[in-house]
Length: 449
Ligand code: SF4
Image (tube, rainbow, N blue to C red; front, side):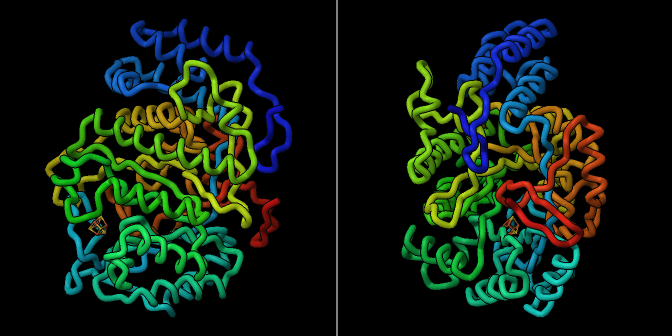
């Protein structure tokens, strides 16, 4: 019998009449008939191929692309639009690297360069507590001189000040940097594992998805060649999963990459998640792999969005479980302003919408896709909710990385703004914690079931 996401309560699979009507509706409005095989695959819950993904980028029928993504989004998340109450902490913008698409980094003597002391971080944690935040999202530049102990002290301070606050911190790029700083850089995967274990023991709860950019050697060489490779990024997340931490993933698109590069990036993430979910299912004694092993599916595929899948959404990793997984894909549009690639135009609205929809369709084993309003605007996030996204991120407040044109570091929306945006788009807003457990709240006090 099928089961519910959080506690394996029984849940019904999708009625086949609704699947049939989805198919009829899409076929009847179709303007590009060459999409029929792709439509049939999505309706049946079969995995899309690389060629399918490329066709979805090329078709002029963007309505069909978005409608297909909406079907998959509904299968996975119903009419829920997730949001959280969070705070971002960018502890320093001083960075040893100079990636060409980055407008955040500064050198030590540059105007605007900063690093927070632990006292300043403490103040921000108290503010987060006062605001009833459930999550602290922490990333920064690759600071050349801060010792590894600074990061451990930061986490311990937050854990001691606010034990209930989930700490989602440090991109894979920072984790590799910490291994070097801690003298573990030559120990390969074991050095990375040591760093992740040390951070986890100090309070780290999960890893954000930043720094993935586009997994392609040419793009890596042209835009961020001093940064870790795509393979290394995937290694860090694999090790984090093995250590029981959930993680997210991103794709930074719209600069020098091609559509084929974007699809390849998504395919690599999907492949990694297949492997991770099988481990997760074994570890949790959940018959995930058996229940979705339909004839004709590529061997080893784990398609959460199949109409008959038993486990559609995943139980958050409990303390007793040793395997984490990818939760969410966050498509990030390249924003040229103040970067060394300022001469490039960057993507616009429909390209952003299409990339998000195709991400939803290709990543059939990712539970969530996020419309990151800080880089997309809240109005665009509403459209994205109707075209594949199920999550809008959170209330934020201070955000110092790349933002939409002209926005300052103060980036705040209220809970009411997020709820109104979700409802206006036709969805039910639900506050979540970092692990997508619904939050029950009484003012600043909150708990998850
Ligand atoms: S993208 Fe990250 S690693 Fe690259 S320059 Fe900016 S802060 Fe540094």
